[in-house]
Image (cartoon, rainbow, N blue to C red; front, top):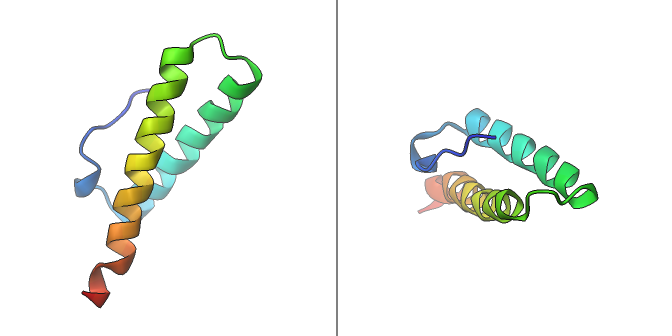
Length: 62
């Protein structure tokens, strides 16, 4: 799975799609942890994506 580094330029829909894709690959890796480094990178990316989505969700309230 190719990871994007600039989540701040993504739309809500794109962030939701990235979250779903990461979660699926992470779920697959939990049952078959053949590539632990990729698994850790995906977990880190998922945190970054969720953080960006959270910021977008609450931006109008600032």
